[in-house]
Length: 419
Image 1 (spheres, rainbow, N blue to C red):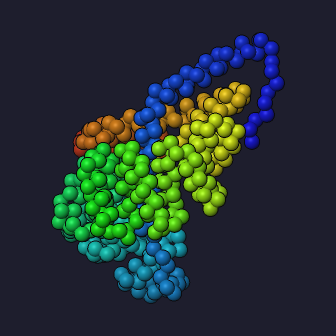
Image 2 (image 1 turned 180 degrees about the vertical axis):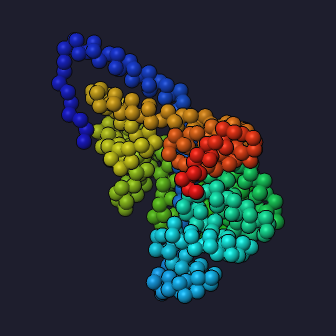
Image 3 (image 1 turned 90 degrees about the horizontal axis):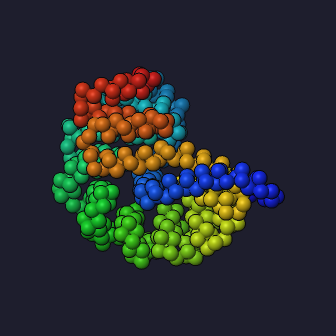
């Protein structure tokens, strides 16, 4: 709830509050200086989050008809060296939500049949599910060393490269494969995403328009095209693509979110609100939708409604985007200086790492083969508690400079608990 309004005090209280307000203004000005860069990073993060959600959905396997964990375990107990029995048990364990347990069985099979493509793809799949991205990358690379044309491995490895911002590696792997496999839409969309990440809009648009024309029923290929149009500020085209897609897939959350964003970015505030409200009515805890509504209300000068939506976001996801900043500013505007100040200071502390991340991400894009940049990115991941991504960046630093002692020491420290 919005804090109760404080009663007016005397002049001494006003004098006491002035240093606090000056400090808060300084925080806001510091943020504003970095605002364009941070918003670009947030938009790219949100786009990659949607792509990752679709990618992870593609990994999800339905339970086998008639699957029975007890029977599968009994089959392995009876014939522990039977690869098929072990893989069936692993598949049932994954379907039961136990990929960590399944990993042991699949690794056992991979050790016994190191050249079996099906087993190695399943192993890499499990590593991805468990967010052990370096192990997944290594498995895909090993598989491609023995089967260079394996499109599943190429597609998934490229997605991992893209998710880390390693567009140079993704393009080097994808471009010849796409030329050799012009009819594979998924490889082509991965390549288009690498172009999109590096702002090579012309190549990205050519590929995506070709995909839309050739695969009109593959709606998942349309969303990157809408994202491209949004990046180019071609909002009517983005909205047209999304509306066409929604006719074929009504209520699709990813399409609805992108449509609301496009309407907001084109200053169609009422149109954006309508879409966000539709999303919230179907999913009351949808954080981006509540956040989008707050931005709309703030644009319309409806402070009370904006505060209510931001308080909902703060309750559901306190660290989401600029929630604390926006809510703190609105509290200050409505006379709640103490509560607003607390939120602004918390925002400043929590987003110091985001500003560093934005800076290093830009460095990584311009210096993809600089081991020091990868090492710095690993440090950012460690400070944020993301050990698995730090491990990937440290291995990358060592690939580029095998004598990088600092990277080797940090990597040994991080990988010790796993061993």
